[in-house]
Structure formats: structure tokens, C-alpha cells
Length: 382
Image (cartoon, rainbow, N blue to C red; front, side, top):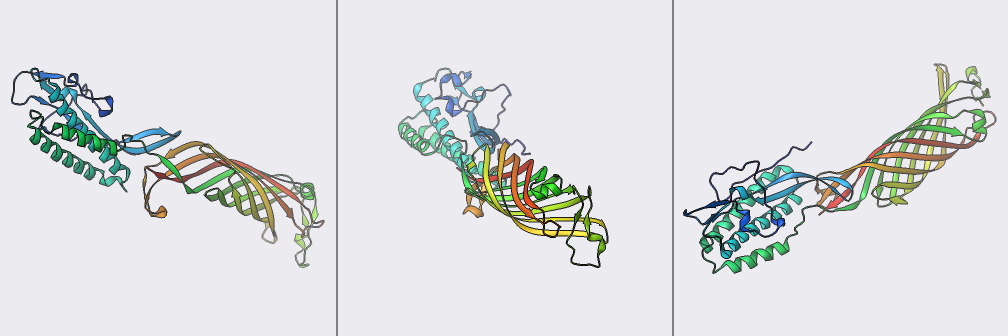
């Protein structure tokens, strides 16, 4: 879990403290007024003082219905530590402080852009210190040129320059997520396999455990999975044994449990792939095995290569965007992983035959499973 980080830098003040009761006045709340300077003084060398802070902190926000994690640059004025002399509450001096406040917002937006394009969080502290140094240097020059607001000759030029910079920097801090073509998923499921036709006459339905992995590129789905289970013989079945020396392989025993396994390699096309769910028909090549091991000398195993078709459906009931980072896989773009936990369900229909069994039972084999899937998709972040 990411720890909360908030770094405060004192600017234009050697020593100050901020109480928990102070109100943080942000730039998006509108232009400054003299009411934002809550401390009134009489006399003194300086006419007024504006205290502010700049920093960053981890943010948790719901963007497009998805819980997202990123870092937010913060900057604000501290009214409880800002003051003005009672006889200097002039419009020109307020304009001076508004320019300082605008410079603070320019640096906050610049810092936010740097946070959004960093490749790791370890560099954030250095970025913040660099940001504060730029701001201190700029405001110090502004104070000298305007003599702490008493000389308004260059004030209009500073106002115009800072407003132009604000117009070039986006005010929003929330990232936007654009899907990349690559997605991935691993899943585990439980279900049942039911044989039909002569297979259904000879064997009972069986319990199934399944697991698999797939990845997608745009709407194309590539899948590798395996199912394992067992079923019972409904009646005595003779094997077409080609080795007369092994007499114990002559029959399937009624009621005896036999194991089966499927290994599927498939391709699907995502008919539905949105924020909440996925739906894809799948065609696969299935390697199906049927076997038993009652004793060391009583063995049977038979494998067939069969076609299979199916339908995959997933409902994403939990999603989260991870902190973005640069990825060489996508041309050093800023990438976020959208992690998902989904309800996974699948229906597979295959044709099965076992000619080594007398009567050559054959027919359709229906496998239905329900489980849980862990996956995600990569997204560009801006």
C-alpha cells in the first residue's frame, strides 16, 4: 500500500507554523481578495505577506468508473499565516499578490506534468525541490522589480506573462486512460463435463477442474487451457486390446471411476469488450485423454485429438488502474495497468470418440465451468 506523502516547503519565510485550523486557499477557488489575508497588522517594515505551500500527495479517484491511483501536485495559500497592514489594502497591492498566486499555480501545473511523466516515484522529492527552487528564484526577481508591490510599472507585463503560461498548461490533474491493444488474463474454474450420444450411454457426467491463460490483441483472443475431472462407467465395456498378454485390460468395470483431461489451444474473437464485460466465441484444438490406474499392472490411457468450439464470458466486478510508468514495450510511453478480477464462465462443446473401446462410443462432450479470472489491459496515460 502506498504511504501518504505530503511535502511542505516554506517559501518567502524563514520560520512559520501552520495550525490544523488554517484554511488552505487554492487557485481554482477564484481570485484573491483581502479577506483571504486574515491577519491585520499596524505599521511594520513590510506592507503585506502571502504565505503558501507546494507539494504532492498520492491521490485515489474514480475515473470512468475505475478506481485510479496517481500523484497529485498541490499548492495553496495559507490565509491564517498571511497578513496585510490595515492602511495598505489597495487594489494595486492585491494585484501584486495575485501575480504571486498565479506564479504558484504555474509551478503547480508544471510539477503535475513532471509527476505525470516520471518513470518512478523515487525521483519525486528531487522534482519537488527543483520546482520550489524555480519558484523562489522567479518570485524573488518579481519582488525586486516591483519593490514588493510598491512599484507597479512592470506589474501589467508580469500579469500578461503569467496568464499566458497558465493558458498553455492544462488545469486538470486527473489522468486520462486510452486502451492499448494488449490484454491478459489467468483463470481458475470448476464445473461439469457431460457426454452425449453413445458416450453418454457408456459414461456418467463428471466433475471438472479447469485453469487457463489467455492474452488479447485488439479483439483477437489467444487461449491455452486445461480441464481435468473424472467420470464413471455406466456398464461393462470391453477394450479392443492389441496385447493378448495383458488380460486385465479386457474390460471397463461398471461404476469404476475413470479420469479424463483436456488440453485446449484456441482462438476467439471478442464480440464484446467494454468496461464491464467480455464475450467471445472460441474455436480450439483439444487433446483429450481418458485413463485409469487401478493397480500397477492395470493401466489404461487413450488420447485423441479433437475439434472444439465454445463461448467465453467474463464480468469485471473489480477494477483498478495502477500507478503509471514508462514502458519500453510500447515505445517508452507512459503506461498504466488496469487490473481486473472477473467472474469467469465458459461453455465448450467437442466431438469425442474412443475406438479402442468396443462399440466405439462417440458423441458430443459438453463442458461448462464457472470460476474467477485475474487479468487486465494496458492503457496509455496522459
